[in-house]
Length: 636
Ligand code: GLP
Image (cartoon, rainbow, N blue to C red; front, side):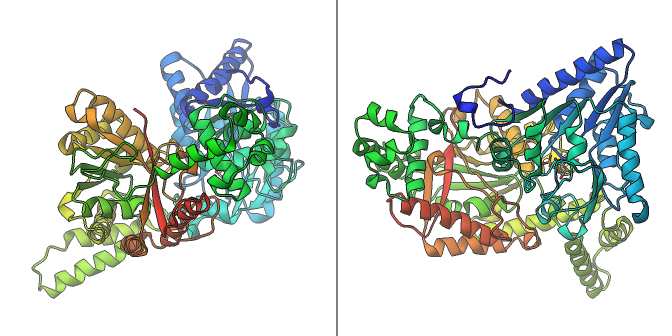
């Protein structure tokens, strides 16, 4: 795919290629790397690669490993330089970038260990400057970096060049931004454990390489991607300095591209084909931009905002407004399972069959109540047969302190009952907890117990929503049980488990999330597993009559034009949902990540999101509700 400059891309200051999936993008970059290595190998010259960590390049590394194993791609003549390393972490620390690279690439290809450079995170503070200088010298001695891979952090950092880093900076010790540390909190089992400093190549070091590919996947990156590609160069977003580089390409997926003007507001930069979808997107945007209700938009609003051709096509603002008002009105329903004995021609969900078998899929416990607690409660109250399935155990998100409290309870209970309880398990976990320390990997026993703790929270939360515990399924998908954050791999075993669930429930409607998320995240993998399972079930009778409703979360919401079903909640229903969220005690200290970062805990964020949607409907001139949960229909 070549970058074709057009009026749609004229605002872009960096060539940006948008791919259908992360894997497609990785193919292009893997091809460029393969060609260069083969060319250099043939000339008996080394290839110098600049490498990045984080979840973004993992799929590319998997593809390079595959090419090495199956197609003979040799790294024997390759020299690598990594961008950065946490300061204070030794190479064998489970979260060090050296360890990450060993696990994700180095140990699986024929790279010579002495040719893999990662900044030394353990160097004494008074030797840091010398060590950084030596790193720059080593890059120069290797002849400079041929191809540099980059990801991007939500602060707009490349490597660990946080806001404030200028284009002339070189390899050095830096202080990490609080948003960056929050994003790393899950890897380190708590923000407090995330190192405060790192050693990183500078922006100047990066600008000196020959060729750059920056990769980015998922909606979480959409906002920073647009600012980097279209904004002015500024040290508040160091990635914007990539605009200076003569050979830098952004290879991103559609979700990460979704905030680029050519995707978000294409009518502002050129002529577009007005379809139902683009009209809806443009008009709802116009109403929000002008702060007017849909029915109050006038011709001037359209002409002044790049939409005169739509006006000409449709005749008048009045006609467009009324159409869009009706479309939006018809997304609202208090009956997410369909309303029996009612005309359903303008309702999001069909009236029959009734009651429905509704399957709620929650990637981890909490996602269900957090994103659609009110809807679950309504489905149940209307008499539908509701099953909630937790796709993964969520055990990685349980702090050790919670395990400690549980084993103390078990031991005390055992002692109270004068030896009637077997304390072996509790005592084993107690010893293991001590041995592993803060950062050690959890043993199978510890993960098991953490999973049980989350199950008990899920049960109390579901009871709050009126769902009996017999209707909860804990799938414990193996990709999660066998993995850690940013490094999960889904396999056939996961799909088989999901298929078994679908075939046993035979749902009329499924509520799921993960669409458009970072492909290695828990929701995205859970969704990929669902997709594969649905594919396998294609011949099943129930599949012929099953609607799939996507919820956006956690910590995010659909844009107004994407909503196909909006379920309003009364103040009481909304409070009940918040009570349900409270039941997830181990998650209270977890800070959810969200671009706006206005709220710092799940219940406040749920309030902010659901009330926010209600406010949008209100401002569009529809009814005023306390809160709204919303869904997008997955087209078959
Ligand atoms: C860290 C790394 C960056 C990386 C960023 C994004 O801050 N130092 O090099 O680009 O995280 O990580 P992810 O790819 O997991 O989103």
